[in-house]
Image 1 (tube, one colour):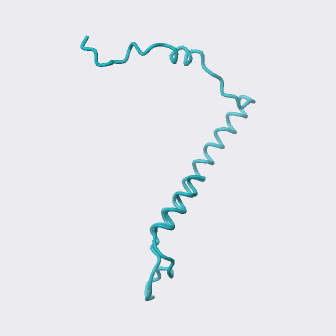
Image 2 (cartoon, one colour):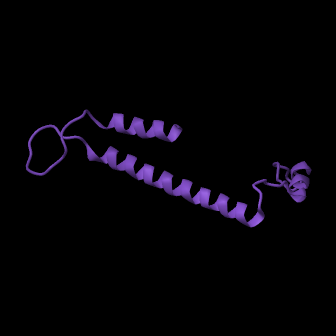
Image 3 (cartoon, helix red, strand yellow):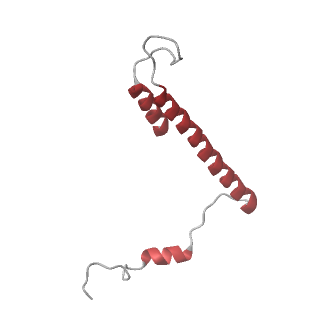
Length: 91
């Protein structure tokens, strides 16, 4: 929904409605750059969404479920204190 709102914002910030920018015509023309940006954003969003859905479907067909399990090693790392990080100590 946020992506659609940004696309509408880009279109409305472009310029006032006008005629199509065709060579040989006089008058006020609409700027084609915002329209091209919005079309590109729509195509990229569709591609990313298709890729994510394909990966989710592939994961479901391989494992037979769609649950993401917690890793025990990740839990241990999250609970450990950050001793290995440098906190500005001169030692």
